[in-house]
Image (cartoon, rainbow, N blue to C red; front, side, top):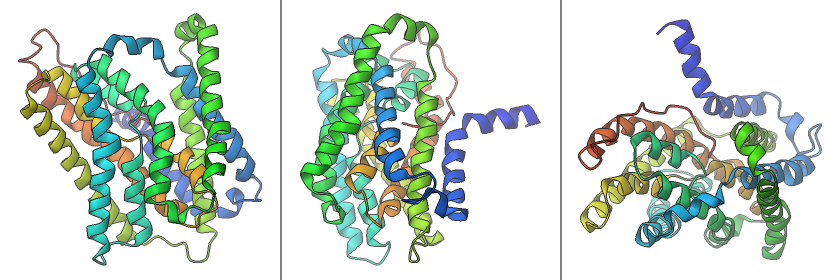
Length: 348
């Protein structure tokens, strides 16, 4: 690979590299991003950063496109039930089994709960579905609908499954969610309706802006962790989390593929969308919610680590599946040309 090709690959994966860089910088200079430090995350993250991410989501969410896929009720029920019901239950069973062993520390077990509670991503599942040539309208619908649903369902699941570590009262959590999540989201939708023509013409880089803010949130989260004297995360624990997350991803993909194929009511194009939408989890929506629900928790970085690992794995694994799925889909949609595999890391 020549230098330009190498740089191109690095740029495509800039967000994953950004996560690693943010954590390394937090380890080297934790005092900059701790509460009360120069960056004052207790204000800049709690109110500004989270609000901007959800305002961005409101601006970029094309809710007018959802009507294209409204009629595929069975498909929508399967995806939302799988991602917000089956996966949380499966993760709960896995956590209970692992708790009987000394394989991994409890904070990371709760982190697996966190992954299970997350809503589907806003864009990564859509892009992978389009790359294969699957039912992109269904992917758009379920990514958007799942994101809205997750704003209400995810905090409830987090408080129920991991609630013993939360230091914020239930009412305060939802008051904070309303101020920094719901209000900016709906304001973004209002602005989108007013400025729709301009936004579609200029196509502002909403994803890049949210990604940069998300890196700032990740940095301050790990600054608080590394500033604590008992905060070291063992390399062996990280490796164990990677193995568990990768295994879970593969199992969920296999279950989705086998179930949707055996049901016999979905086309191959539908199954492609269901594979990605059912098994992917949102990092962009998840990290800000965790900052709100578990504000002040000393275990926050351990809770977020499995989700931070789940994100790049779902992108890389999904990208690796694209060529195979293109060949598998071709008999069902012979007119669809093969498309190149997307390797760009996405923040959602």
